[in-house]
Amino acid sequence: MIPQLVVKLTKTFGHPPPFGADELAKVEFLALNEVTALEGIERCTGLLGLSLANAHLESLDGLVGVPTLEGLDVMGSRLGSIDALRKLPTLRSFELGNVGITDVSPLLDMPKLGAAKLRSVPLDEASLREVIPACAHAAIGFA
Image 1: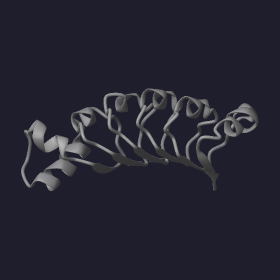
Image 2: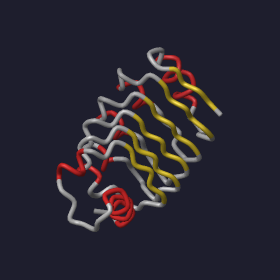
Image 3: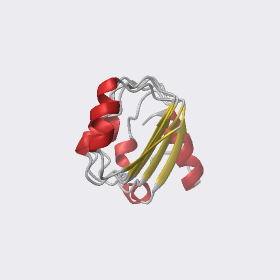
């Protein structure tokens, strides 16, 4: 389990690890800063919302094991891809900002997505001309 997650859960539960599966299942929202990995987050089986600020992540693959995630906010990260979003079928809202992602085509494979906000994201021409218009199922905003 990554150190930032251990610190957050220790404050939440009022005791250091180990954390029981019943405790971890009750965690519905997490806000983590400057994480370098997502190891252990899959143990939070009831997680509905996650905010990652200034994350030093190249991918979101560590979220694939979180079957309940409905909201994701990623600001200021080294992400190279959002392909892992295709494997998050429950995701309803997504916010992405200050990252170098140019391809948002994974949004096409997210039928439950209701809203996406993209801030300071340098989209490529294919995303602007093809992907965004094809995502009629979601309200997509730009800032």
